[in-house]
Image (tube, rainbow, N blue to C red):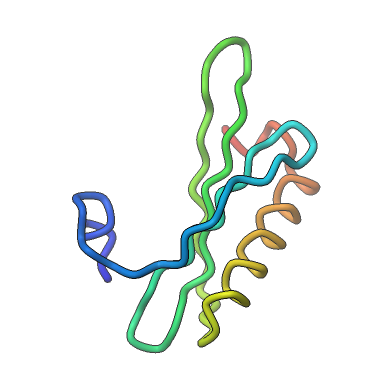
Length: 90
């Protein structure tokens, strides 16, 4: 599914999950369904100075199992948070 389809309501069947709070960041695993499986992706949010900051993480990695894609998306988001902290938002 293309990025535009996802942004403008393309009816994909990505696995739905709840946000996970990790070190003050919210992680929303959002694997993207593609022909070869599910691309690793997540939305990372944090309120800084009263403003909601958002980083969209999209990886080249693809896996066939949707539950595994959610797990890997969360793990990659945590890794980025550990490495970059608030610098993740520019």
